[in-house]
Image (cartoon, rainbow, N blue to C red):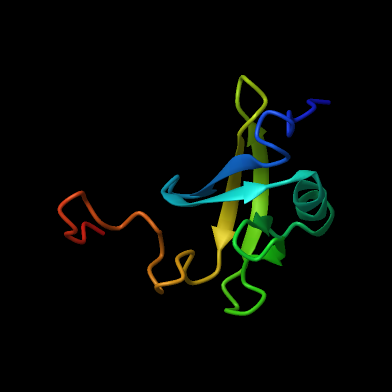
Length: 109
């Protein structure tokens, strides 16, 4: 089993979240060892909130859960990719993806 290197990032690793059907990138979050374990145990994407300093289950307050279909690890074992079935929207703005604007600020999705 692969061992994620949480020590490189002071206990946190980036987690890229992707729609498992369309492969659209939905968001970027951070995970620690506990949030990864909770994700594996529950099948619901669980992250570490850097601003609040606590675990959070995506969708717990909004109802926009991320049901994990696959967990991949990059070659350096310090970044996680979650492929998920997204309920409604991934972005706190209500957009399906957090990546909906170009550099000029124009909406592209």
